[in-house]
Length: 272
Image (cartoon, rainbow, N blue to C red):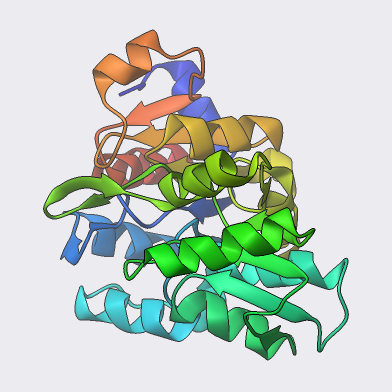
């Protein structure tokens, strides 16, 4: 954990937060100790924040309910998913009513349907998010569409996902299978790509010089934060470890064991 003067000065400058959820606030269905208190301190201090997740499986309402079961109380407006970002990205190239094939779960389907897209097997766009009910037939349909010229979009590149059982396959593994089958790489919407950060910062309403991204992944949260010119904070409660950090060319600005330690340090720096 960085606690020197430079670290405290960096923390003091932070007015708003973009916060990953998987591996930061919870693992699977288990809350990470201190998560409830951290979010509570942000609300008490009036600090704007968004829960910015690459996981596209749930709707914002479902995330709201999941967090509430863990004692973490937020508003639906605090949640921004890669599924919502993908739907907003698709708006830039396709009008409502365009045909879209999805590999994904309810969060992705609802986000696209809310924008007026038609979910069908005969589509001009293929949007792929994490799907825990993935089948060969789904991969086959997507591959044939992509080979036939459909635009290939991935909600996020995360190869793995932290769970209470351990580290399990993520959407990046599905995208890799389709890229291997088609020879075509997807356009990625989620972290570390710029589109999700642009959209999130617009919603947050705080200048990027006063915003920190808090995450557990070097290759998405930290790398994306650097590209977006944000303060990057790595927590070691999810995917990344001290060993990975030591060998990685991607370095965060600050490192904490978890959000409990981060929250205490931020409050201390803010009140000095």
